[in-house]
Amino acid sequence: MKNEAQSTNSEFILKPFNGWVMLTWVAMMVVLLVAVVVLAATRMLFLGGPLTALVVVSLGFLTVLGLSGLFSLQPNEGMVLTLFGRYLGTVRDSGLHWANPFAKRTKVSLRVRNFNGDKLKVNDKRGNPIEIAAVVVWRVQDTAQAVFDVDHYESYVSVQSETAVRHVATSYAYDDGEGDEATLRAGGDLVSQALLNELQARLQRAGVVVDEARITHLAYAPEIAQAMLRRQQAEAVIAARQKIVHGAVSMVEMALRELSAKKVVELDEERKAAMVSNLLVVLCGESEAQPVINAGTLYN
Image (cartoon, rainbow, N blue to C red; front, side):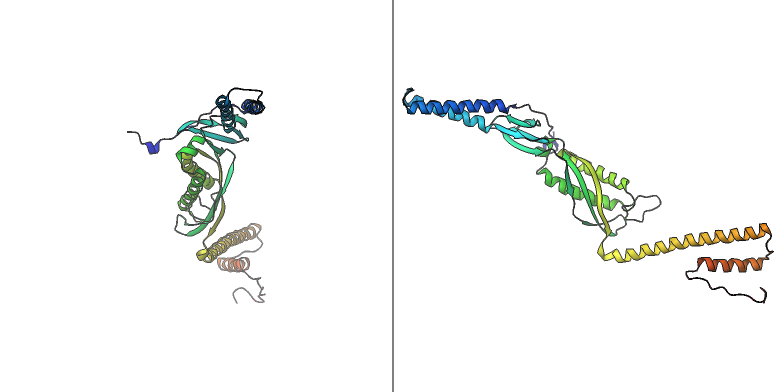
């Protein structure tokens, strides 16, 4: 059995009647109606009381019918028409049109729109509370799905966008991934593409196309922000120390190699050890080194 809740509608284009032609026809009906009323009032036209009334009512009805069927569309707008619950089609052409006056009309904007999400507090992949927000650039592609398959498609976009952002945030670590794993902070285009794919999968039901999705705000939650800042500072200090030590060892190695190659001085293992110790202290120390002049020998 077909599940009616899962059925989807599909848009098809409806070509309406030219509104300017119908407006001209309505103007002619108005002129004729006025003429009949004036002639009947001045007794220049005698059709009998009931017949005159019938003519006036008929012309008035046709005039109202013609006017009520007129509608206009601006560029990038669509009009969804339904008659007694049956979908008639969607008008996308801009201008003045005329359609069945008894049809229900629902205007849908086809313009590109932005959804600026609020800051959401979620847990990342490692359970750390973070704040995240995103902007979503979207537009309606299928007006039939937007009107009939979801209830209030704009609210649907808002709720599903928030859900997608939460899901993506819980799928990545903030800034401490394992190996080459992408993170929210350093993932860049990879995280944005994942968010775009998640949004498109969720909003396809509403006939909505997502053109772009970007994270606009990303930070640790206030309760752990200070602790995480200290951790980042410690990691930065460790990284800097590693570079300093690596550079110092390279410089010491180069100094020993140059002294040995140019035979500036012959050093035994004890003197080499002392030289290495002094150079590392000078190169790795945080404060400026104060030299001490040895007036004797190295072995005193």
